[in-house]
Length: 185
Image (tube, rainbow, N blue to C red; front, top):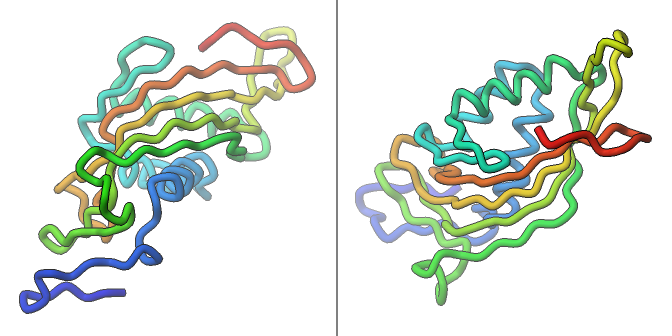
C-alpha cells in the first residue's frame, strides 16, 4: 500500500488499490447484512454511513439509529443468517470526478478520499424470517430493495478509504418465499 509522508504530498492510490463506487457499495452493504456478529454489523454500518446521513425509507425520514435497529431486527429474526443477492448496480461519478480516473484517491489527514458520486442499486436480502401469530415457527421472506445513494468523503472517517454514504433513499418490500408480496414495510 502506498505510504503518504510529508515529502510525498502528491501521492495517489492507483485504480487497483481503491475500489470503484460499485465495488465499494457492494462490499459495504454485504458486510452489514452478512456480518459474523451483531457487533461486526454495527461496525460495518459505522464504516458505511455518515453519522448524519440523510436517509429515507419508503418516503419516511429515518436516522442512523433507525438504520441500526432495522439491521439488528433483520439479523436477530433470521433463522439461518442473511445473504445479499445483487441484481443491478449503476454508478455515476460526481461532476468534479469526471474527466479524471474514477479511482484516484487524495490523501487528507492520512485518510484517502476516493471517488465520490451516486449509486443506484437493486438487491435482495435473503433469509428474513417473520413470526406471524398463525406461524409461531416463522415464515421465510426476502426483502427486495431499490436504493439510490450519494457517496462522498467524511473527515471523521479514520480508515484508509474515507468515503461514506451521505444520503440514501430506498424502497423496501418483503416478499414471502414461495408466496405473494406482503405490504411495503
